[in-house]
Structure formats: C-alpha cells, structure tokens
Length: 486
Image (spheres, rainbow, N blue to C red):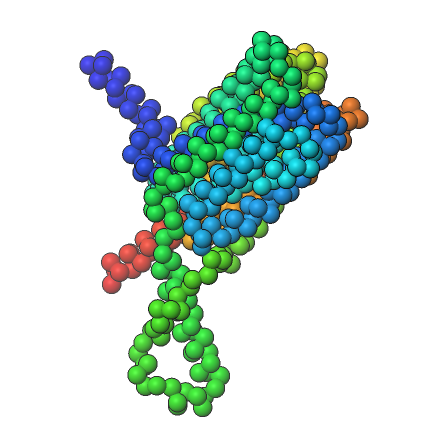
C-alpha cells in the first residue's frame, strides 16, 4: 500500500514537472533540446573566460566593453536577416549554417589575437558575451517547438528546453573553469594559451551541433499556410465587391457564372511563395508593446552579462577560474531546477503572474551584489538571484508563442530577439567605462532598478490578456453553441 502511494506521488510530481510531456515528445523535440544543451555548454565555457582572455591580450576594460557591444550589434544584423528568411529558405538549413559559423569562430579565437579579427569572428560565429542565447538559433528552435507541441503542454516543453540550456551553461562553466586552472597551475601554461584551448573545444562543439541539425526531420519545417491563402482569397473577393460598387457600369460586364460564389478561385501559381513573412495588425500591436518592455529588461541584462560578472568577482575578490566555474555552475544548476517549478506555477496562477512574481525578487538581489565587501555575502546574493532569475523564461516564451499566429512565430520571435540583443548591446560598453573609472557597482544598481521597472510594467499591461489561441478557442465554442441552438 505504501509503495503504491509512493508511486502515485512520484507520478503526480513527474506530471507537474512536465517529465511525461518531454518523454512523450517527438524525436525532433528531443534533438532540439540536445542542440540547446550543446550550444549553451559552448557559450558557458567561452563566456567564463572571454573578458579574462581579452584582458590577457592587453585589452583595456573600455575596449573589452566595446568588444561585447560590437559583438551584440553585429549579431542583430545576422539574426534579423536569418530569422526573417528561415521559414522561406528552410529552418534546418539556417541551423546548419549557424553551427558551421560557430565552429569557424572557435578556430579563429584559438589561433588569432588580433582585436578586430576577433570582433569579426565573434559576430559571424556567435560568441556570446552573456552566456545566454544570441544569434538566430533560439528563435528558430522555439518556433519549431511551438509547431511540434500542443498548446496544453507547451509550457512544459519550453521549461525543459530552458532547463537544458541552463544545465549546458552550468556544465560549460565548471569544465572550463577547472580546465583552465589545471592548465595554469599544474601544466605551467601561459594564460593566453590556456584560454585558447577552451575556444578549440568551442569549435568542436560547433561540429557536434551541426551533426544534430542534420538529424532533424522535415517536420521541423513550417507547415503549409493554407489558412493564410484562404484569407487572401477572401480579401480578393471583398476588393472585387468594392470595385463593383464604385463602378456600376462594370457590374453589367461581370461574368454571370461568378454569381453565388463566395470567392473567386485563384490559380495554383498565385499562392504565396515569398520567403518574407507577413504579420497581422493584431500581432503587430502586441509585438510593439512586448518589444518596448523586453528592450528595457535586455538593456539591464547587458549592463551585467556573465562575462562582466566573472570579471567583477575575479578582480574584486581575486577568485581564480576554477572557483568562478564552480560558483556559476551552482547558480546555473539552481536556475535549472527552478525552471521546472515555473511550469507548474504557470498552470496555477497564469503566465504573466509567474513571469513577474519570480523575476522581481531576482532584480532586487542583483542590485545588492556589489554592496558587500566580503566575497561570501556577494556570492550569497548571486545565488539567491539565481533561484528565480530564469523562472520567467519558459512562461515568457509560451506567452509570446500563443500571442501571435503560428505562421508568424519564427519572424516574431526573431524580431523580439533582435530587439533584445540590440538593447543589450548598449550595456557592456557602459559597464566597461564604469569599470575603467572604478564605478563598476553602479552597473548592478541600475540593472536591478530597470529590471524591476520592466516587471511592474509587464504586470500593468498584460495582466488578464487573452492570447490569439484563447480567442480562437472562444470563437469556436461560440460557433458550436450557436450551431447547437439552431
């Protein structure tokens, strides 16, 4: 009896955490999650040492900040173009291309020390200054996941997708940190040479990601836009009626065979074949509001990316690479576990409340990090922040994917990522200037205040918001009731 109750309890916990949703998901969904783990492992490894590597090459703090800003600005252009045409050219092709460029950039970083060559490699090869997602990968993958996943379990899949990324970052930071420390202390390597080994590993991980992209099936490609074609046909009919009403003489010449038809039939070759996406007016309104809010949050994130965070702890508290790797391994693992709770919480209080009520405390802890003069207290604030800092990610992506039409998701998510990256790009150069004049702590305070403002504005604008999917379901129920009454 006790064993039965234990099994039942474990089953309920697994259901709450979305374990069954992931286990029963498609092969493509699992491959996309594995790709994210691989990519974020590489990002975590490279981000831990990026600022330290540039510093070891003799780069000033201000130029390190400029490097990060230029990387993010260049990524805006690359991401914008690739995500806009991804559905038209093929999502898998874009993922393969991105993986190849990622691997090439790792090779360049492991061989060259020229500042501007490294800037170019970081832009085209998507070197992440923050340890988080940049580039077109995430938008394409999230759009694909939304297509492959029923809306009822979408928040579960996004939560696990986020978890795989956080675990990847955690593993990358601890492996990189102790590998570098081992090379420096036990192997007698120079700093520059030890850091370049990590970028060699980065290049190898790019190859692994490329192979995983090639294994994806054609189910990852966008579905035929039958509904959009139908809407275009109806629009043609309305326009035709408008022309007929304005020019009465032409009505007599209209073919009688068209009477009684709801819409003219277009030839097959007139279907939409453009690789460029179209976004409905309703989606544009929502997108505009979200982009403004995400821009504020991303600018705050850009002030204190992981590269600057590791640099701060290394310079202020003299923490070596191995301890830095362990510290950020712990924070990422805690963040990963909390993401699973976010999915369960979102089912109970809603996506918006989950986003705000988990993100707001983390903003406060972020502002407190630079205040202590003791390393253990600053690390405590960092760990407390990690308990909730990413709990808003899965609900946010689930909310965004439901707020727009399925055919718009790749383009919309790409645009959102571009806005976020563009806003984030202004942060590192400002922090570099502050670090250069001994005012590093200001970046943490400003970032915390901006993130708190974002949370409150999100709650104000979108609490009670009905998504496009919910509106469609309500319309269906209304039609069913009307048909039943008739």
